[in-house]
Length: 356
Ligand code: HEM
Image (cartoon, rainbow, N blue to C red; front, side, top):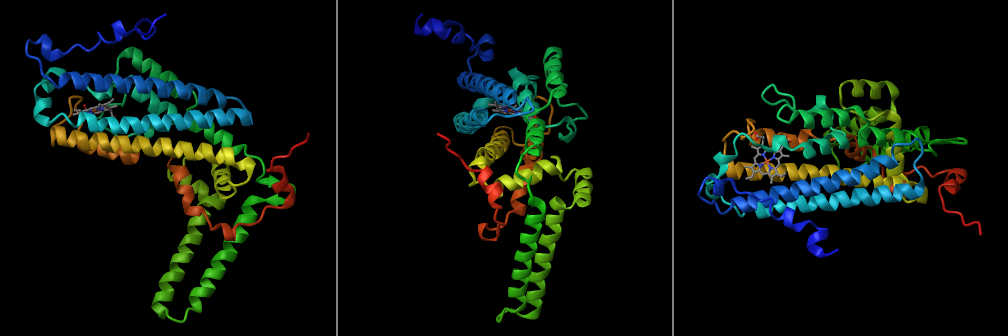
């Protein structure tokens, strides 16, 4: 056992074969281009490895508390890796468009569209085929090898992490415990809060009637928005339109975990949700950074994979998101001071008990 042997450095360091060198004229920046892409693929491998662990934890019908801690830890690791991936763009941007032109044509028709691991990552996180932006009337896996397409199909057939999280959230206890009905208690607290706010606006000494009308209309709009999550029929309507993708039960549980996250039994769940949002957001930041880098490298040229380049990539930062629903929960948060207090029986069941 030694350092080069363990790390297989002889093989690893012989894997940077410059196409420009093969053509007899070394383009200096091609080495950086290869090393950067290879390190991305290595980090994708690590992210998929962490996803294996997280998905195995959420695979069963019960998630043990200790396992939830391990899942959160792995998810937070993924976020750190993604942050590094965003940072790597800075290094690649030290290559100027002119430097890139020295070897770009040698790469045609290879393209990021052929990264199997990136597609696996998207599918496993929960991005659905039908939610993807179309490009050139091709399916998203059309440029992959037949083998890679099989792997993608297998990942699509299994539950994604998003599906598993949906099922796990829907099983959250405490929402209907004893005489406690979270949805009812929350709606009552909400109505009391809005009535109080309306009263304050109506009696405000410095607002004109027009200003009051605007404020009151905005409060009424908020109430209608809350129905989008709390009212079964309205929720079903919105889900059919694609505005929600998670089940109503799961989202109400997510809301519960957001609101009562200080209770020990809610804390792990809240941290998991937060880590998933961080994973989603940091991936979107990478997509945006990559798109901006592409625009400075290529201007308005089409990509080597045939896409519109910048316009397509930029749009994916907005549209290729698997956890948008969790971000939407913020719409429904109310101040801590307006939170319905948990009945003692529920509160007790959410606290640590030492029975020594
Ligand atoms: C000079 C640097 C780069 C340029 C000019 C570039 C350009 C492009 C373009 C134009 C596309 C759209 C597909 C196409 O038409 O080819 C694309 C997609 C992609 N690139 Fe890059 N890229 C660069 C660096 C990177 C790096 C370092 C990675 C790291 C893995 C990467 C990963 C990807 C991935 C995963 C896609 C598919 C994205 C999607 O469909 O959402 N690219 N790239």
